[in-house]
Length: 155
Image (cartoon, rainbow, N blue to C red; front, side, top):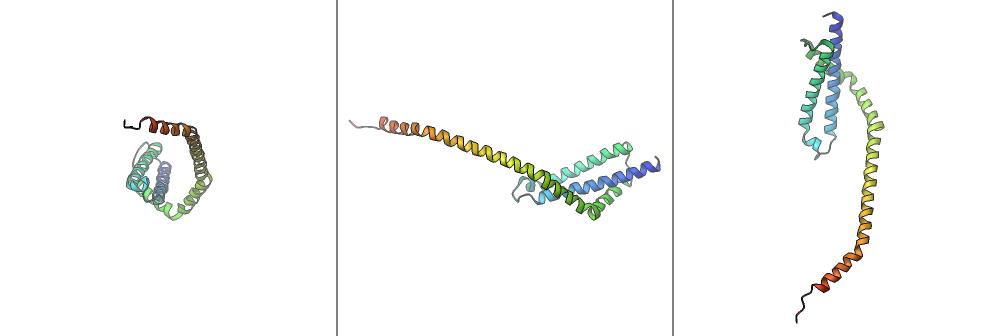
C-alpha cells in the first residue's frame, strides 16, 4: 500500500470521526430537547446504541471504499482524533449549519404540515356539526315517539 493511499485512508478515518461526533451530537441534542414524557426521551439509550451501530456500519463502508475493508491499528486513533477535532473546531460551524437547516427547511415544513392538519381538523368539525344539525329534528322526533309509544299504561 502506497503512502498516499495510507494518508488518504487516514484522512477518511478522521473524517468518519468528525461525522461520528456530529451524528452523536445530533442524537444527544435531539433527545435532550425532546419532551420529558416523549417517546424519544423514554428510549434515549436505544437511540444512542442505534446511532453507534450506524456509525460503525458507515465507518466500515468507508473502509471498504478506501482500502477494500482492510483495518489498520491507527484507524481507531484516527477516529478518536476526528471526534476530538469535531469537539474542538467543528462544533460551532456544525451547530450553526444545523440551526440554518432548522430555520430554513424543517420549521417551514413543520408549519405547513401543522396548517394542513389544522385545516383538515376544522373541516371534520364543520362536517360533524352539519350532520348533527341535520339529524337534530329526527333525534327529537325519535325521543318524543319513543316516550309516547313505550310508556307503560295501567288499565
